[in-house]
Amino acid sequence: MRHSLVRSVLRPAVPALAAALAVIVVLFPVVMSATPIDMASMSIESAYAQAVGTYNPTPIPTCSPNSVPVGQANPPGNQLEPLAPIWCFNLNPPNSPGFVSGANDWTDTFDEVAQYGRFADHDYGYRVFDNVQNGGTAHTQHFTNNGHWMDDNAGGFQGGTMLRPDRSFTMENVNGVPTIVVEHDFAAGISGYADSSGGDVAWGEITITDGPTPNNPITDGLYAYGRFGGFDAFGCRIHALRKFTCSYEAKRGGANGLDTGPCFEFSPDRLIELSGFEYCGNVHSGFDQFSSNAQYFRQCNSLAQEPDMNCRDRFRMELTHTSLKVYVNGALYGQDLNWPARNQIPATWGTASDPLYVYFSDWEVRPTAPAYRFHWDQMRVNPHNADGTFAAPSAAPNFCLGQPNNTCMAGMPTATAVPPTLVPPTPVPPTPVPPTPVPPTPVPQNTPPTSTSVPATPIPSTPTPTRTAAPPAATPTNTVVPPRTLLVGSNVVQPDVDSNSAGMAEAFQYTAAATGKLANLYVYVDRSSTAQQLVVGLYTNTNRRNHPSSLLTGGVINSVTPGAWNSVTVPSVQVSAGTRYWLAILGPAGGGTPAFRDQACCSGRSETSLQTKLSVLPTTWSSGTQFADSPASMYATP
Image (spheres, rainbow, N blue to C red):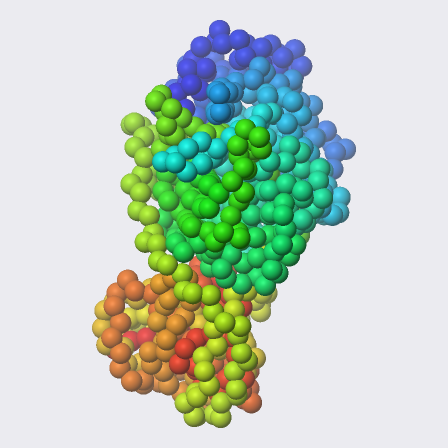
């Protein structure tokens, strides 16, 4: 709980607050509250706004773009936020800095920053880098308001803005292992930061590097951490759809460019990329919305104008030369440990001779709106306990597990906040690096496959693959089919039409709803389908990397009926509730195009087969392109 803010709004003698009030009174009309502040019935930001007065000036009419940025709730309720890009307003001078800087640590709550306040380079003890472009034209600007800092980004560009404390840090020994810890509260889960297909449009990043400025050769133009050529940079981008992608751009270069496991190196300088399916060390788990702790990463619905406070989560990186752990609201969200020697960060990085700088960036690619707003709050680098040890991971002040959207009512806990119980994912050693994939030999129709299974080839995650769904078709009347016990899958006709070329299979991941003997498979075939025959099957899930693995059972649907549920009886197999499985569909090679229904984004995993000339489902799955298009309208019953 941010007690310092509560104290500041109740003590009118605080110099910074008094200064802010004086400036506002001189420059703009102010309506001061004559009613006592009821802290129990209002959010932290509301209390802050009421204490400094209602100050909500009209934007300059000639500014451009003069529209509410994505990421800003409209109406903003009692938060008093600017409803246009911040360069459309005359800003107040900054207050005095409020950070606490120790020998090797930094804490800033931003509790006493100015309302509608300037946040330029060297204000509040920070270096600010606006209009950082990797291509295109951009307009960005930082500012402060309601006890936190923000920035607005606009323009058709690939780039954004960066900020860092105006000092360096070193790693500290934790059980003999040099470690740096970075925490920041950030509203990452705003749905408007993704496009309608689930592709990334805007996001925040945390970068740790020995580069003192971002004005360096560009090693990867798509991301902020690619601005530090000539230095070692490790960064994590935090996506709106509750996932992380983290990369190491190495000064020494030498990436093999294969973009496959382990480490998913990519030329010229990326020696590591980590995500839900990308790994480097021999222990890997989490990093995406399928993490066992996904509920700790909240989301705000932009269409519903949900305020950023409802998803302003606490993100934490614990980085060593050989490992990374990321936390969300105190819960372990992803880890990758024990990197190979060729991929490790140099041992001198983070020492007194090669100190580190910590950047917080907001970035855009393919913007679909005129402007975007990003909200950041408490920042800590190397947070310490009184005895000098690192402080334990903790939750954002308004995170309350079990309440609606896991958010405390009235914006703050009503009792002492207790850090959430950590339920870390069980690490599983990765599968040894597969040999170079060999294209499969086509198999005659209706003959069991005889070719050797092809190892999975992970697809590059840069950028995240997306596909455009066909326009939703009219929903048929048989939307739900309830007659038998549903063991695995979805018996709902999903809204989006999907298809694959004949000969390419696609599998969709589900968690079994019940335990039982599976004997029937169902699939809803869209009316646009031209396939006369379909092959369907059930696969196991690889525990290590969440891919289909071995074919458990399957069958052929002959005389397919478009626009209806189709089924086939299959050899019976046992499934267990709570276990992950994959349901697959294939239009055999040489036949028509199968069309089916799924949800184009972003409730679950799906992936196509590597093979493109299949006549039957392979006994061992080989992964092609990965999507987030599950669930599909497929299910299994006894």
